[in-house]
Image 1: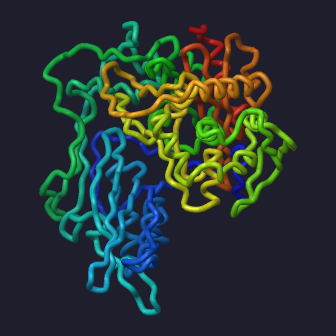
Image 2: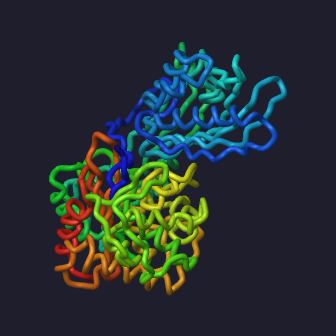
Image 3: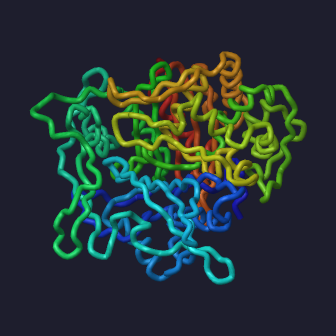
Length: 539
């Protein structure tokens, strides 16, 4: 039973597919593995095309993007063929977590309804392949609408005679140094291995390169290049790339992850005053860069953003009484970790003890899309970040119903983040100003954010400090310095333990850690951050 305790269960585990230098792929359908956010806007039910057709299209795209291919196929006129194609489209293309975004439905006048959509297919380690396509829908006997199956709805150029192929160019790992000129290598800093070949400060032409080609199925002849990734090869030896990393922080971060007890885990440390990344560490050290590219429900660490949204509009004050019962039902029953309760609690107490039911009870204080708007406007979440390596920059979709809105208040539902995002959220909360995170000096910054009011920053800092001195982050209370923190527990699924989260700040550094199946944030991510902050002096 998913109940979103502090949080018990609903994040997504990042894919762990092995990397290959050259992957040849036959395209036949979409969305390799995992549960993906479809990012579908609601359809207007008034006038125009039959709302039932729009609903079918929306459900089809949601199932397709989530990897529920049998369910998606059942919504088409050719279920068997559709399931085969949808299940094999990205085979060999190394697609990570696709996002499908629907546009308004259109009545074509011939008995069909068309729903245009945009497909964003992230090619691991290279970039995002974005294209537009259309879903044709036709009414069946009995008034049921179904997707009129054809290959071209997956991609306009997919056909019986042409398919897609991914080709990568082999690249040598970039020579890199830390911010002080110390050489960085996978030998001395194992977690950096997957990053070194992808550094965009290889921005003067280096970095990973590749392309998705449309090819003849019979001969393999390239008909056209759909998308190319990476710049031209560098003309010569440009010398090592100077990163923002700090060798001491990087060593400490990698050592600290040993406290994750062999579980998949990741952490990021960055400077609060400019967003420069000091450390990126992953466990295991090879393969998927979950610290920067992972997609997780952030659980109760997201209550920093939720609190910011509530405090911004004066919807609640720290000393206001906001009751914290064991359970609260909003379409489903939500509960707190270990079904705890705090009758007559203040909002401050709700934050420090991470009370889900109290936060959910405040859901009507925010508009339907207000939490996402605040996340984007003030915290930069969901905007396009140019970090220096491929990154996932977060998503806070407008809730589709009351239950999803309740879940989003506590960092569940379709809210998605990773340690990079949550370290940045922490930095923004305690400084008031968003700085795009960066691994390489001089990366492009196209973000546009607004500073948080000083009043809100003061309140958030006080709430996070209290979480260390008297709340769920007491594991850090014996460390020197004015440390503030927030724990989080995020549901994954009924058959998996919860992910554990913790974010913290000290001096000019913000850190964030996630431990997959860590059960609780304080019990799993807490010891990791304690080890990290113990190893590096306060700056």
